[in-house]
Structure formats: structure tokens, C-alpha cells
Image 1 (cartoon, one colour):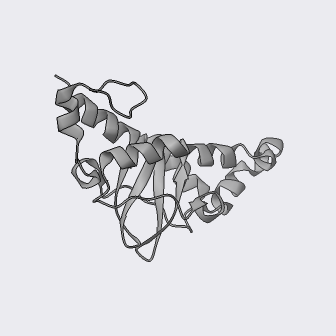
Image 2 (tube, helix red, strand yellow; image 1 turned 90 degrees about the horizontal axis):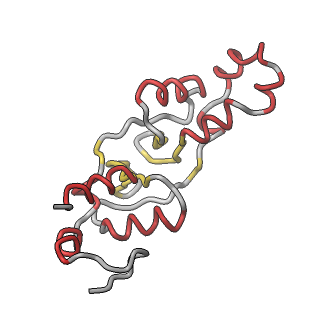
Length: 155
């Protein structure tokens, strides 16, 4: 049996296990979020303390963006910060998440299939997708969630 996957062959037990599986079955519910007004310091602290790599940005209950550990590192190491180390503390409290986030991120719904979500992650070279109902965040599906699903299905 051939499938449309990059690897070619999909064993029958995996084909049955994944076929039709929805994002809502494997997403992380209640993800840690940031607001557009949160500071670079807070975002950096969450990455360090929680070990998470992406944070949906929510304002008034609506998803307005996403910020990743890469966005945070890039802002942290901006030329202004590197050239003027004495201003680091000042800058960490002045740069807001709204200035480093990706607005209007690619999203999926709880009813999106895992295959569709995985295809979006691969196509756009991103690590995860906010899960929304309307414009309300209900979860996040990440590479890690997809790998855990695969691990659960392997004999």
C-alpha cells in the first residue's frame, strides 16, 4: 500500500490508526499564552522556566498572533541590545510581544485532520499551529503532539 507521505509506504496498522484522527484528539488544551502588552522579559522567562517554544498571543480572548522562542532570541540579540549591553535590562522591559510576534498566524480548527495539520506544519516549516474556534483559541497542535501520536500508534 502506497501513501502520499514523503517516506512512501505506510503500514496498514498506522494507516487505520491515523486515518480520520482529528486535531481535537491530540492537541494540547489550555496552552500558555502571552498578551500583546507582555514584555520581552516575560516571554524570555516563560521560555526558560517552562521549556516551551511557542506562545499564542491573545487579546480580549481572541488570537492575534504567535511568538516563538526564535522571535524572542532574535529580539533579545538585536543589534541595539548587543551594542549597548548596559541597556539590556531597560530594553527587556520596553519591547512588547506585539513588536516581535507574527500577527494572524496560520491556524487549524479542532475538526481539522491530523494529516492536514501535519501538512501545514511541513509546508510552512513551522513547529506548531494554534487551534481556534472562530477567533477563540482552544488549543495548540505541535510537532511534539504529532510525534507522540505516532509513538502511541507504533507497536
